[in-house]
Image (cartoon, rainbow, N blue to C red; front, top):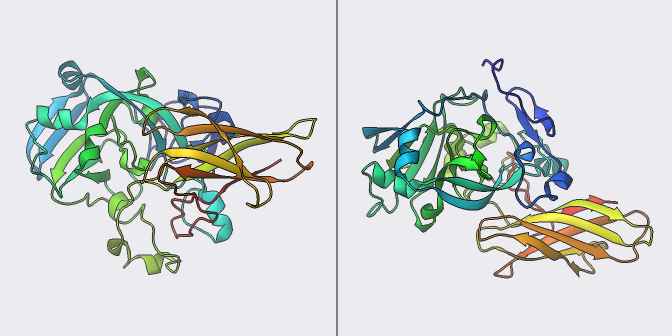
Length: 359
């Protein structure tokens, strides 16, 4: 793979891997903003980052691998309404480094910064398919497959992912804006998929092909990656016959992170963090503890915007020791609580044990 012509990357990110470029900010810097600035949006890549000419960028749309409809991005933007949605993007491997402390895992050792809350702008996938002459009515039990052949990939000839046709498909976008600015190459520009509520692996960057199919994407990243295997599957050899037996991930679990904790001169502790919803409803509250869960204190929610955003929170606890540990747990609208321990799996995905930080 040739990485020599990549555009400049943000200098505010901690580089986890240079080729492909994979980097994240600190959680402490992230929670200072309700909407994540461009320079603090993490970068997750499986190949080189490329820049494309928006004026010539073409999208192929088809059903059952037949009857290609080719659309210029300029045509799409001119003929379909611009829609906005605030949604949090997060990598399936968020907090993988913490899971790796339980037992070694396979993957980039992400911390808690592979998350970004942005206002995405683009065209609805449903509108685009209708414009291309494809109706989703009567397409129950079918899938929308997104593909990017634009750049080389580590584990397959292209990057692909799919989502099932469901009522939530109405919120999916083909985005060309992020926070009111043109989508940069680092984050999938000129066109990427945005699927609120789904993990980032389904938000295909540099998307150039859409297929409505009776089957899930056959791509490596849908079928043999980003799946939660049982803890007893602890080697790649054991995993080989098991990938097809477990479903592809969709939503991530209810989660919270302690982004910063600082003790003031009067002995009180000030804590800030973020929380993200799971599949059963938005975040209703966050609690923090400094004694391992014997006593919980309610945190104050400082930001939440709609169904798909992250939740920012802060808490102040009086009279704590000079050093210690603070933990957090999120609670959703159905009363579900973030578990104390995350479940180990070989790929190190979907870790959601209590958030923790020292002071």
